[in-house]
Length: 258
Image (tube, rainbow, N blue to C red; front, side, top):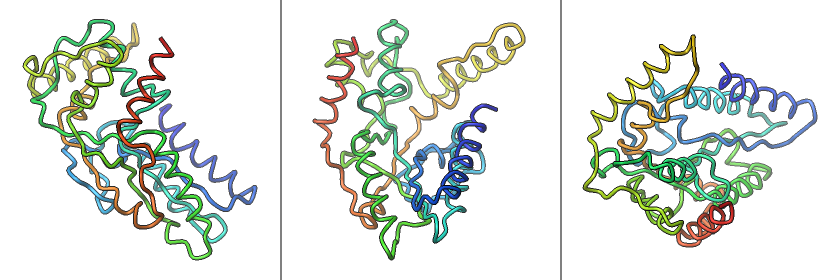
């Protein structure tokens, strides 16, 4: 499918181009999704194996792509993989943008889950900083980064997805449903499965992608927390944007976009 063509085939094309043009180092941007399956992930580090069953096709293809990058590591082309957690910030097309779009449309009458699941976010500016540090370390004469995989996190603790989004949307003039108005995970998972089934049944006639899926429900209702100490230890990563500044920058960007 298209995801495999872009995530796997595209990555292999980049690796081929690096070899042909003599590029010395490649830092691959993967995702926490690469190790996410159908079960909660709690304070995972880089020793966490790939799941037997991936959360979705995106997760599966990102895992295949990062494996290709690690296999390609060699003295003439050093490679490493960064796995940012749930990214947010200026230009965010997914997390903040999707929630904002749904709230503006009045299509979010309740929260999903019991509010106890924690989700790890990381600001895009800190992810960019991690890439610069990783590349510098990758090109050192005796690099300990080559052939390695790293989670990239912020310093602030993981919180519930809706609790994280609430102050950002509040600054933009929108309110999330109150915590008392929530729907349990099993109900939401069943609804996501039904919508996926309807989308599949309608595919020969009309193609639509449901905004609510089993995968999206799991990501919000299951714990997804990670430990980023390996990046701190191996190439000196530390967030340069504290959470308050990251939030302000994100809000300012979305406000400017109208």
